[in-house]
Length: 469
Ligand SMILES: *Cc1c(COP(=O)(O)O)cnc(C)c1O
Image 1 (cartoon, protein in one colour):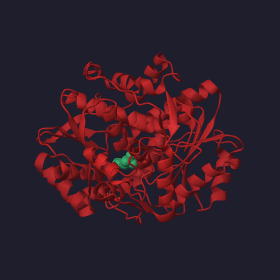
Image 2 (cartoon, protein in one colour; image 1 turned 135 degrees about the vertical axis):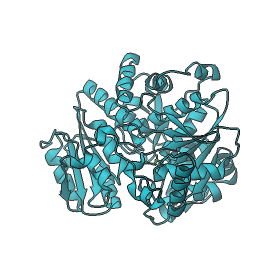
Image 3 (tube, protein in one colour; image 1 turned 120 degrees about the vertical axis):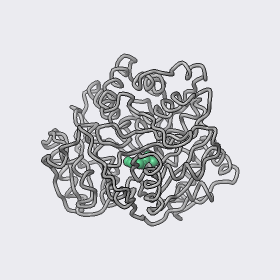
């Protein structure tokens, strides 16, 4: 498989190089040159496969030429073997023809494990083959950091530096990062906010001279491998609910448009998805686009669903590329307008095209808590605030009661006790067995000033299994 940039001016890469690439050199994001397409018969024949075998069927075309089948199968078996539920992504019924796809049975209790457990193993495989080491730098407001550290902790060829804003992530989220020890794991608490952390990652990608030749790799959802891994569970859910003979609708709590873009790809690969609902919190740039063709930057609003607190949705550019007939120059022009003015609209026919598949809703904190309480009363399920936003949007935007509605359950409620408390249901979620002693474990973390040079000096001094580069 070959990969092209959404802005059309960067070199075409194979899977291995895309895995190690961050942004494309023209500022765009990499996407497959040709999306594989499966027939209905083919998809139907996968019914009942264990998750890792289904994952092989769905993802194989994306890695062909870079990873031999037998090796890829083994990587997938290892990856999904660490999940704490034997179905990996079980469906749980909430209401009439309404289901939550529980994506929180991985090591860090959020859906990001699906992609980052795989990404860590793929990186190690490819780097061992090339006899190369890399440094990962990432910024996190919570879930990404712990999932990336869990995914990379066993990687021999990766040193990972995760920055989080000091004293501004929840205790569960912090402990999930700082209680994992290894020579190659480095937690940095920055005396600043999340944007400061993000900015330092961006600046480090722009000028990597401090790394003395070691390659810097991205683990945020601009990395294609993360999107790829997320396509699989749309197939998994549909196959259990009568697909592909029957169409399915999905509601996806989203921030960076990564998870829902994977659903869009699943549809283009042949899965009959009749509706995709973009569910946002108060940070609603995607909702404003879907409902009114205005993609416009707003200020950041902190919410009870912090993993969706974003101002711009990086993966949205991948959808724009398709909406414009895969014309990189058109995308580059929109993004340059956005950079200059902070907003853009697309041509009416492009927007109408998007609306055939996508609906959207923005859900505020009050509605989020009300939905947690409502669902708890209806069926005794305790939702995390992100999933609750998905449920609210599903209920408001649903087009057909005859079509199964699947809400992506993106996190375990124990990660977000504040929202659950505010919902007033009187139930406190408990930590699952593998994390039961989380609050007793030792922590390891370095607090650094909000200063690029200080951070880069720290990375250079520890980037080779804790030793200087
Ligand atoms: C990251 C995250 C999201 C948003 O996912 P995107 O791919 O950015 O749309 C939603 N819910 C939870 C719990 C997350 O961790």
